[in-house]
Length: 194
Image (cartoon, rainbow, N blue to C red):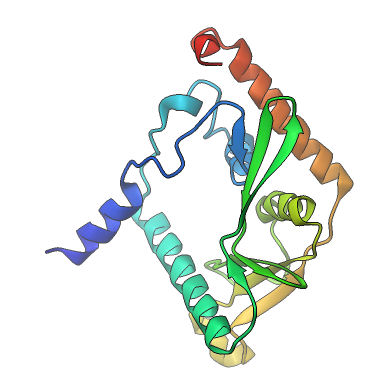
């Protein structure tokens, strides 16, 4: 057994967990559409692009930190629900699916494990947080795990930043998804699937 090979294959396996369906889009698709890695042409391929070793390390670290935080909250009897999913209808046949990290009575936490210290929410996280805010009508907090080499200096593990909702960002996200859905509908290769 090669433990590294097992982990690498785990993050690169093809599965039906997030099988794509026209008209159903995930909050995390916004960034992929914006950066061009998700296109109308490859939308239904259901073939994930290969996750490189740097990304494997980042995903593993972020998942481990988030899982341990949830474990601590539960042990400390803090009421929370991890990985709550909700659908938002944004058009006649268009759903935006939201899968948040941690739901609290007073708000939502989106966990991130950046490779360098951050004191502000990066733009590429804000779209996701905007959608969470619209789905649950709650405050959204970005929980940024402090890189391990900085924890001792800062005397903290998590930097908590409250996301400021933006109606302009929300409208732009909805327009982006609707335009993307329309491009799929107009794509002759996908027209029969629509």
